[in-house]
Length: 140
Image (cartoon, rainbow, N blue to C red; front, side, top):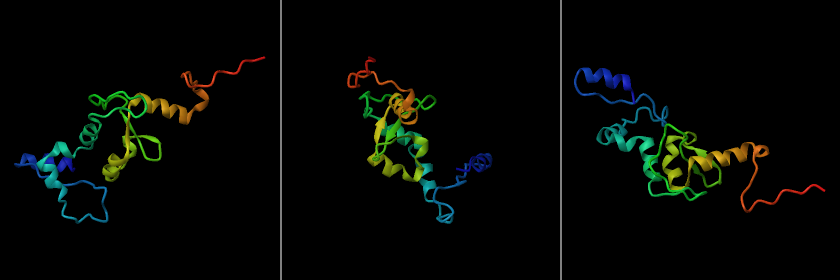
């Protein structure tokens, strides 16, 4: 959304909505912007953060089973497990791929995402102390 244009036009009456950029530009720049009527009718339903927060409702982390409550986006946020079994943060998902991602991904809590990221990126720094881990070798 072009926030500056909306603010200036609101001084003259009703705010006029227009796009500042779009994931479908430049190919569809002259599309008529029908999405603006959807945004005007229900702005909260169009915010990616709200769509994603609703997706987590009633779900539990695929790794630890902990149920999701209200999502705190200012702290380490939850992530998702893609079909390729790689966990990613929401900022890595392009907005235009959101519907297909939501249809196939599984929810991951922030703690499990950070732990899995650490194992993936720095396995040499990780000690697995779970019950299923192999016992350490005994020096002779």
